[in-house]
Image 1 (cartoon, rainbow, N blue to C red):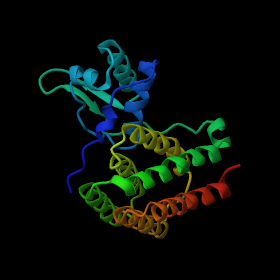
Image 2 (cartoon, rainbow, N blue to C red; image 1 turned 30 degrees about the horizontal axis):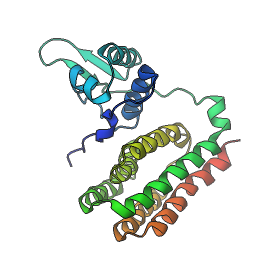
Image 3 (cartoon, rainbow, N blue to C red; image 1 turned 45 degrees about the vertical axis):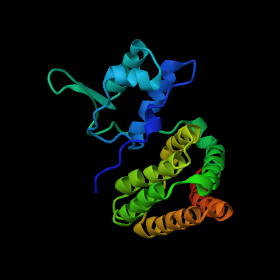
Image 4 (cartoon, rainbow, N blue to C red; image 1 turned 45 degrees about the horizontal axis):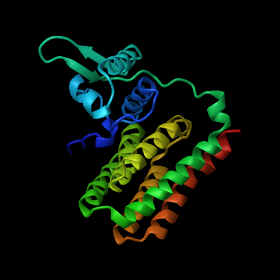
Amino acid sequence: MTPPAAPADVFAPVESHTAFEETLERLGTAIKLGLLEPGARLPAERELCARLGVSRSTLRQALSALVRSGHLRAVRGRGGGTFVADELPPPGEESPRRLANWRETCDVRLAVEVGVAIVAAERAPAEALDALDGLVAAMAERLEHFPAFRQADVRLHVGLAEATGSGRLVAAMTEAQGEMTGLISRIAHPPEVLASSNAQHARILAAVRRGDGPRAAAEVAEHLRGTERVLAGLLP
């Protein structure tokens, strides 16, 4: 299956006054979540500047920082450009503050994802849901390999936000997924648990397709609370 392109809102205009920090966070989060896949070539600088709405100097500073951190690699000469690293650096330890505030992180994710489900049930086009059904099928084949499962999982959640047509909801979903990644990595992921999680994905999409916002919201809430229950047993 041909991997889907990164959501357009990865390169949506940066709105923050701290353009360097937001550009770095936007690209870094997209890379860590697999929205920009290993080996993928970034658009040319001129195009990136136009799409992100930042100056060339700001973009170059952000790209340089991501090259130094090992998330990107720069290739000179013919066929050159800026590429996502084939292997990302190992994730750092979660900060004590983030571990202590894990419940708040889960609360934000719940609010974002429930809201996305309700809006998607109102306006998601059928073709977008067809693509998400394809991700559910792909995850069913990746139950023994959590990194691949997680990558498709992130694409599904971000893809549901993209199906709302709201760039802000896509950005909020991407941020919520990024915040959860370090916490989720602390959980064991046996195939049976992943299969159950993926069955919930299918039920969420079915409710969205029917236009049943309340049911979609309830399915999402149950889906996320399973993760919260596990974290409650592992974290302070």
